Image 1 (tube, one colour):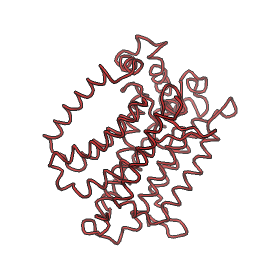
Image 2 (cartoon, one colour):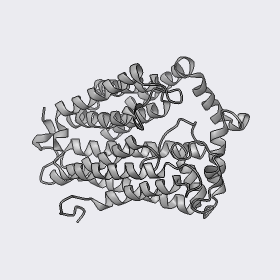
Image 3 (cartoon, rainbow, N blue to C red):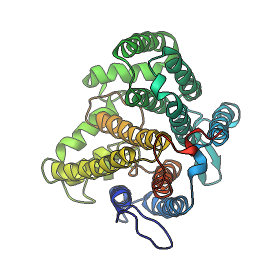
Image 4 (cartoon, rainbow, N blue to C red):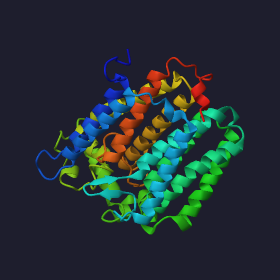
Length: 373
């Protein structure tokens, strides 16, 4: 059985890959006594995240389908993101965190959950009418409102994630090719507008460095250059756990967060990366299976939204480390250092586990919970 009946309810095929990825991340960021390490703090956050997963998977989370709950979550995310711009102190040039002593909280993580829930609710009611461009505009407005607040911080990495999440959920809802072409045109116009009027100078420099990173190896292209060196130097079997020179000697900046994939590839090599991607693959396949068997359309869209969120983070983070995308400072699910995103990731898995457990007796299209107000 996927679900083990005991005091808590697990879906081991969902839980085990996520836990393994988190432990691999902690192992990669560990310095083994050769300097300060974020591993002990991340291990503590992992314990909290596991507690959140167990708690959410054990209780009946079907109330999250209600419109009042979804809108309350969305409004909370909006208020917190707006409050960042008024009250948060800049960290590395961005107002993206609330700091409470030694603990920092990034509201963008909560906003991702809120957007997934809202889009799942919206599409569960209107997916058969998605051919009406009005629904694309309305759902896009919900997503753009949060994305705009993220851009103002400024946090280009998370803004791209929000855009990818909305686009991905539109695609799985059955958007027409004609409307997809219109969205592509709008995206090109928005990109041009950002380039000439929305991006900060350092963000434009990052994109130029992506096109030609060798032009300024010691400046704007340094991070991308060092990441590619780290990935390439891992070769087939890697340098060994704890022996990554680019990461442990700090040639690779932010190797515990924004470039942990590169640090992992250096120590584990191609074989390790294949193992890592296989774990993500198992997680994604299981999420797709749960979505396919979901009791209601909301449950299906919510699960697919989580899958799209994780996949977008993975693709962008790995693409940056391999030099395929500009540096935007994006975490990789379960592995990167940080508490708020790790708790969010396990929380979404807990919600999905609960919805699958309590919704097994319902019928997808006829469930009364589908249209709870």
